[in-house]
Length: 280
Length: 249
Image (cartoon, rainbow over all chains, first blue to last red; front, side, top):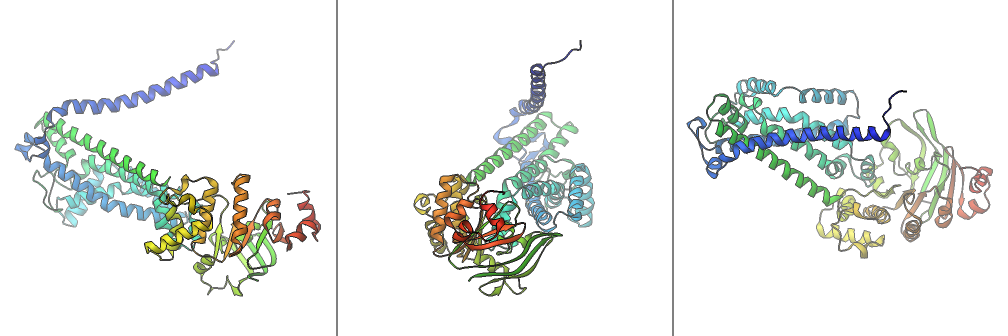
């Protein structure tokens, strides 16, 4: 007689296995957040958030890094979003799913998997040296824009593809041209999906270290223009920890970074749900 | 006469979907097209606003005249044609926009942006499909929150907002329950005073209830085209008789 597991038992086993997998994922995630916050929360004073950095980061706050991170990220998103969405519109609406589209999509997928330090080196050689932009918010933002572009293209592409074909037909049947159809029907319908891509891009850009250390530099001064060199939170954290300058300040910086990322995700999802609720 | 077709053929690549169709559609009547699935009635409907142009591999021969203008002539303005000849689709498919923006879609495409004019058009179009009293305070609501019947009415209103002359309806009631269907049929009878309506329907009873003239199609051929009374009580072709008496289809 062979041993057999009944359907009931296998259901239970599957359920428990999946539950454990989920639990492990969630626990690891929460442990990291908890650990960083526990070590860093003591540093989070108003002074830490609003003061200049002094003595290489041993003293003072992290205001320059907060501002630098925000500027670089905003700059990168402002460049990458129109480019990415525009490319996605072109790929879906104008190339008829042919060879070109597959090549470009494949290229975008490959680019999305390239380690960020490669983008950093590229940005250093191209933006910092060749274009002579120096270590600056501009160079860092451009590099990050190139880095998150594939993500935005691919998510926008999927979102635009998911818009039902009948919407386009109706638009044409009402006398709409291709551009009317894209601007007034396709993009609004695809917006939640496009926003998801942008949020993912923001998440990657805010926490990026390798790509900006080569391109934005590590200056601790308050950024005054897009040509200022700056040190992002992630770079600041890396330098504080690696050079043993101040572990408490490093954890404090990491805590701020995590809180910023959580806040961006929270706000973005709230905005998205509000948008969806308006139309569905 | 408003629409005339002569020796009209349509091919999808090698497949011939319409075979030598000759018909005349009269102004301010409801013309019903019936026939089994795949007989080409929807394809024929899409001839009149050139929606088949969007499909790759379609080739058309013969002529289609609307008010004696050949709509397939290279000089004919396609956008203007789509304004004159509007279409209601099978499923009620409002855009994921507000009720107001749905109806204002067509006029906006036609470069009307004045708020007051748009509001007038929206209200007039809603009134024409009997939705105004229900929705006048809810114009900002998402259109997709409406019931299927109201959405289909809204789609008709969206179409009326561009002031077409001819309404093409591709099985407009197939996603609706019988009560909603009855209401949409009443609406069609009301609309025919101002518009010429061509309706494709699976439902012979529906054609009998509302159509003035009926065309029966089979395998891409227009088998019979006559007044509804003649087609349903005294068809000339045996195939028509077999279909309406339920021998096939």
